[in-house]
Length: 494
Image 1 (tube, rainbow, N blue to C red):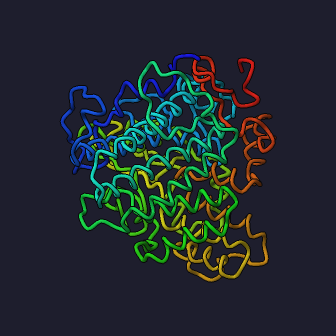
Image 2: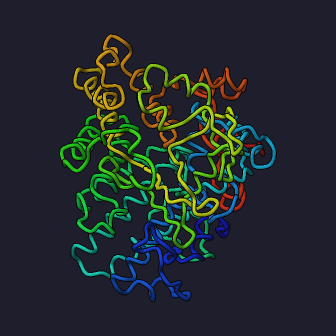
Image 3: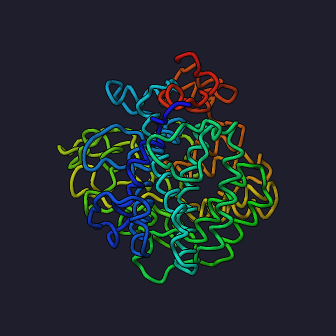
């Protein structure tokens, strides 16, 4: 058996990196530790809180939800995979250097050697390893509320990471224990044949987590933490992916019946640092400009000549996305994107760009914007999906739409195709939040991808629903060194 040079051995050397930073001001500024072994480190509740901070920080890496540490770097985040592979966005105007790498993602032309593919895999599994290490060491804690909460939070975080990996690759490595050391042999038997085993593992973990986690936290400093609502929202999504609509309905009803969440009155009030962790938000990836842990999205998504901002014009909305807003926008278009901006000379420049993550960075790629990973509107639309065509389901779609389009003339067409209208509503409501590609895969209809093929003139995209390109390639080092099987279609060195 080959020695693992894959992500697990990399992660093992980091000792769960735990010990780095966390998700909000209250626990970002942790003093670095020397290099204790796992057994030496995990002794007190404070030790576990530090490690848990590192697990939350796993969501804030360049290959997960995104972070650059304040510098321009390779854009290899979940938005790269789940927005740019869909019909929502493209790579932007640049097709050289980084722009060329993003163009390959956008055109479904990634290879096993793709820097972006490798970075998303590495950072996702680094985060999983951090979670596994915590779960392995929980036996050192006495039974009680603290231990239950740490276990629940960690199971949720691992589930969120595994969900993204399963959507992206499907045939992934499923590990629920930490790597013991860099010389551990590769366990290729842990690679799944399809995503179902991963989703079942996630579902079981989230059922446990939702029992262990509180519905809310009384201390505002704990706003970053996962709740039972977060576990159930993700659980509902996973059950829908598995085709278990009844179980999905049960999980989503727990969120709705908790009374903890509501739609905010104005769609625009969801966004910006001043609105973080609002009443609609169920789980956010937290960013802070303290300790160089700011969010990069303002700079990354802004046009190149946007005044006062070092814009990179990435993740650019498509004309298909603009068309999707027609007749369904209300205030959603203006809060989500724009077609132009006024440059520093006062001239109007035409440029499609995302607005949801605009703010005033304190430095390039250092802004306070959080990333909303799960919110209540998503839950209501998933509940409609779980119910299927029915008056109650139509009512849920209208409930979400009415916030932006309260006039009854904009109510859903109940004589039209239910799933087509639901998918369009999800596209407009949740644009640029990393839901579109998972939605297209889950609905198994891929509506809209024909438009993508027409717009981008890519033969690979035109038949993507029946093509290997619906999956990412397993990174080359995972197949060549760790012995994992490559996803079909990428074998033979493509």
